[in-house]
Image (cartoon, rainbow, N blue to C red; front, side, top):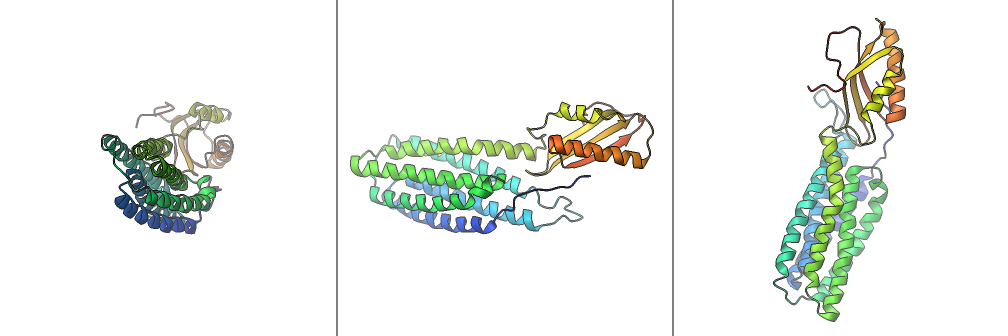
Length: 300
């Protein structure tokens, strides 16, 4: 079995600092939104609140993934903690976005004056704090789905704060108060758009789907290229997390080989699968004239 890992080590301290910044932003914007009467500022605050929760989940998942080792009861350790966190974060953000969108539509029929100065200054605070958090997490986000979900939370926060800031200026100088509801609706649609990809990717991993980059029939062809192998069947390919791709299969030999011969062929198969398909964990069961179902994919 092959166990070769090349993974980026995530800096949890940067994530912790981002959590603290978002707590400050959230409290400030909730108070400011209530005082000013701005739905877009409150929606930004609710978004930030969801970020605080999601960032805490991401931070805990990162700690579990890095520090918890495999045990007799937890043979995979907590390697899926970050995938679960990414899934929770994405589905939470979509839920928040739907609620904000509904509230925005309701506010179109109830346009009222808003204290724009509070909106402007608190939106600027959001831009500055979230912009700093985005810069801190950018490197980790390119290597880790959990951190990417946290990064996208913060990036959307920064962009929504920019939108709220512009809306505040329009309300202050042109008294365009309906822009508040429009911005809230746009923000909600944007959140759904950004979260959907992470939701689907994390869901596929949790459902044990084969990775997108692997064409299953190509795996079959690669194994059958070995003259010693007559058949490969009962194949399962899945991702444990972003880094570990697993394969298990039965391989039937043309003759009754001994264990040392099987080991040689097995090692060659593992090398090919790792090189061509990035499958780094293989569990191969040898067979010879065994009376079982020889279908490539068996409905268990």
